[in-house]
Image (cartoon, rainbow, N blue to C red; front, side, top):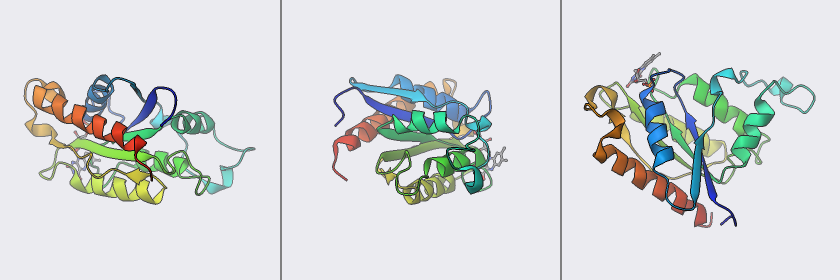
Length: 185
Ligand SMILES: Cc1cc2nc3c(=O)[nH]c(=O)nc-3n(C[C@H](O)[C@H](O)[C@H](O)COP(=O)(O)O)c2cc1C
């Protein structure tokens, strides 16, 4: 365990201003246990598309070093994402690609990663979460399968993602993720 407050970095797969997933991410940030800090890493939409030719100290595109630094400071990741065409949104895939390098030493390497989300479809975005888990696992992350929330955005009540039931689910998910930092790989 780090001898400071444990840090969870939250990645949101939707850039939409009224994104349900962003709201869910905000609930997660507000639901952290004592001794933990969490924040959404902003700006995923401004990251250049991953290109191996520029992935070096001389030609790294603007914002990438900063993004990697912010992610590198985290002890664990919570990904909150919708489903686009049966998989994870491209903006999220691109972010994970940047975090997957340098190979074997990327910012997600060996760190717990939980994946939750909301989608409109009848399966509540399950393919997106499956693909995201596979992707971050191959990128070096330690996927915490027990962190799982799949909400149907069309079936949310008046309180949206702030209903007591959902807040409870999110609180539990964040707790499981935080606890997993202490567990040896
Ligand atoms: C390009 C695109 C593709 C989509 N594909 C799917 C899909 O495959 N499955 C699904 O459940 N919803 C799909 N949706 C609907 C999203 O789940 C829905 O818009 C969701 O609310 C987006 O999340 P957000 O509110 O966080 O932006 C798609 C939406 C867009 C814009």
